[in-house]
Each structure stands twice: as C-alpha cells, then as structure tokens.
Length: 193
Image (cartoon, rainbow, N blue to C red; front, side):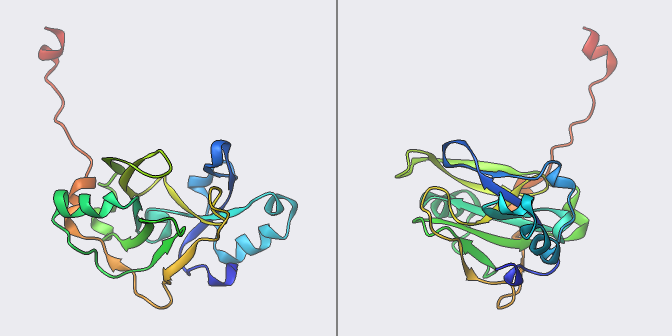
C-alpha cells in the first residue's frame, strides 16, 4: 500500500479519534519529513502497528500541495455560486466513497505559498451524517487522511492517482480566497484614544 504513495509528498501516521474522527497519531506532525519509504519502515515497528491510516501533510512541505476538500454534495454548488467554477481542473483526487465527498489535490505556485491560509466555507446544508457540509481549502498545518474511513469502514480510493494524472495548478480564484489579510497597524494615537 505504501508503494502507491506519491513521490515528493510528506506523510504521517494517523488513527481513529473520538466519535469516529480522524486524527494525527504522531506528535509534532506538521514538522515531520517522512516519505513513503519512512512510512513503510514505521508501519513495521510497534508505533506503526497502532496507526490505522496514513495522512499527507499539506502545504510547502509537500511541494506546495493544496487540498480542495468537498465535504458533501453542496460543496460543488458552492464552487459554482461563490467562485464561478463549473468544474475544477482535472487533477489527482481521492474519495472515501461517501456521496459528494472527495478531495482534489492542486499545486500552489512558490511565489504565493507564504501568503495563504486554510479556509473553510460552510454551505448551510446538513448532510446525511448530521454534519454541516463545507468546501475546505486545506493548506499548511492541515492534513488529509487515507486508509480505512472510521465511519464507513471502507478504504479511501484514488479516483485519479498522481502517477496517472498531473497535479494541476490551483485555480487563481481559490488562492485569492485563501490569502492572509494584511491590515496596516493602527497609529498609536488611535489606540490610546
């Protein structure tokens, strides 16, 4: 299974958390640098045997990797209404098999990487699982998990694997939505008043 992990990405061990959530298993995971070979090695050790999933660490550490995470059917409608995107560019994509739930991976230009932040757009629609659906633009400090989905018990599946499909550049309109706001500092006199 680790042989299918994409080259150039950094990974971490994950496990099922409370209430069927997915969580990082390794401490300090945002700073880890572990390729597929290292994950394969860890899975053969006691620490690895406690993990039930593998996650990819997003952002600059994985070559500028952005995850556009569709958490429900209404996320596609939000893409159309908010961003005027009828269809995202073809790229590597993974799914848990739950309806309307998939994650597409995009490349962020190096010049823009430092100015971006993770952002989530709730759709206002409650999904069949009772949770609000959302479109998430996941970046540095975030991860996407693959393995056995804790709710369905099914394995995540590649719809398009990076070996078969080039990682497309992220749409500019999504990067614009992710830019950190830089507000000028208020003059000291205005703060004192």
